[in-house]
Image 1 (cartoon, rainbow, N blue to C red):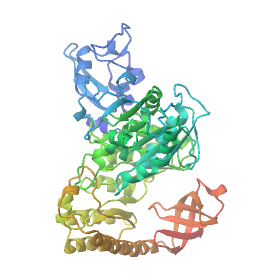
Image 2 (cartoon, helix red, strand yellow):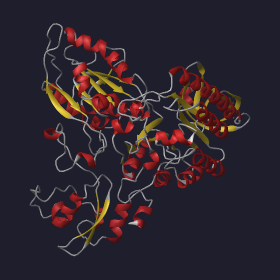
Image 3 (tube, rainbow, N blue to C red):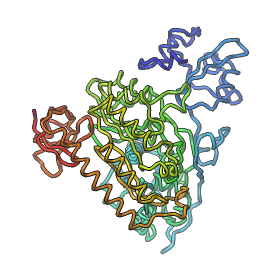
Image 4 (tube, rainbow, N blue to C red):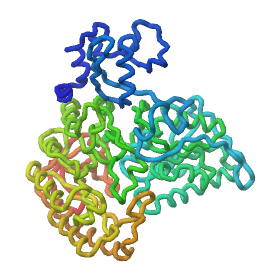
Length: 584
């Protein structure tokens, strides 16, 4: 298994099967046997079927292991006295009759999710006002006359989810997008974030105008959907508070949106927030950009930082297979994309839920070896607790991986970090920075910081400023602590006053600006290579690209000629968060 893990070919299991398999039926096909069912469900009498190739006791053991996509298991058969190496390519665990049950038959929820949830069909009742009963569009077949609009708020994960939502609506349902200001859309989706304070109220406020249209009968046949982190957090509460909403689904149900809308058509409201095993989404996302793309590599987070709501709304960690990720990147390359950003709430945890285990460094090497030469890789976000030397080496040495480390530190004081349950200290964080500076001296280092965490004293806050002075971040995302639902720190009594948090936030932002300009200044007089992405919205004569370290670069040029091309640019001016230059 270790030698298999070290293989870096496009399809290592295919190569392994063709090399060592004793099965004449599948060897030349790289071991492929097709779909299998549990022995008690298998209705196939075909001697060439998958279930006839694998002994029943091997199939039983495989299902008992509760495998995920990409898992490879070595299983001994007592029937044949042979060992079978089995790779799980895909899992089908849901269909329309079971989509809205609270459990997947035979798979306990505790094994597939770390948050609570509920799946339910709720009979639709008349709305207040003039007593309208909503009548929704027919979603049983594609209809190019139907339109949709998606309102997105939040992080890169939310933006990637919106692209997947659009893919389902357009490719599976044949719908067309309309302007975000168009209130006449047949389907209106709110893809939400709950990281910031008052996120829930912002969603309720935004729903108001659409709810009023349905309630008045002006647009009673509009499907109103809420997804994302607020949907996962609020669940059925959201339907009770805004009964005009038709669907509340967690991010994990985005691939099932077509089935969900068909159920809405039957006259039900739907809430779908129960945990589930990640399945590959075969609907092609509608990308928000033509040159760069988001690629999810791991969903969820197993950490339980005392301030963070992510584990409750994004579920447990579930890694995608390296092969499926490469396939997505190669498809993007065929479509003309030149840059992929790998996404994960805790991307360094990639592969630890797989069998055999993989690492994020393994993934970087695998993609670097197999994607086209003109494609580059970025990624977010790392966790200092799990960050490894192998990732530093990969970023420093792999030609297609950009030299940028996003390493949230959140606080500079050890006691505060302990109370946050971050799992590292001021000194251990600085040791990581020192290793990065040693192996990749030209790399950028970006971070996140929270000020005013419960109990943070002025002396402890000064330790945060001290760490910032040591690192001098290229870019720093700064936040004042805010209480979030279902988090431990929200219940503590030692909350820091709002005026103190505001003053501290102002201090870190001022220092971050100083450091940002200092880090930008190192580029002046140098020639850097950038991938041209867009025009400068403030100057139509200029285009914009980014350095490998992530700094925006503006320079004179024709976007039509340069978009998607690499350009060498001499830097003539440094700004806090960007650079100005001229074609070299």
